[in-house]
Image (cartoon, rainbow, N blue to C red):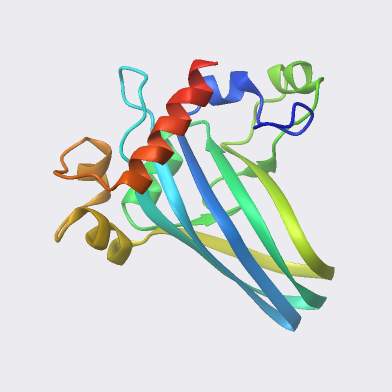
Length: 186
């Protein structure tokens, strides 16, 4: 968000139904490959504030002409509730259950997205490492129930977390929610 030419456009964040941040998604492969990462997702409440975040994981496999290892920070901006509901109800395959497109960036992002807002989810990423090749792959985004229970307590569902039905909220997730509030207030 600090880089003006690479940040998520403010008008997309203002209209977002949910935002997932998954730092350090590691992808490795040599013909066969895989990816894995853990992060947080928060949902916009009816009053416009952000919910407590739920923990999520992203996993995927691939096969094809590929070689290397890389780490990628991923931000997913959900434009509709449908994608969020699918995640809450189980797992969600990016690209199959909802259209995912690389999000617009730069000074001209406002103009280019106003006429073409067709994807349900926009993805933003920053990669480190070396990875080359073409691969057929899909990634599944799912709720990380173990991490939710560690952070919020036993029998905690994502819907209950999103609706504010939790007791003590760990500082790390409060910081995430506060950052979302800060960026959407700008």
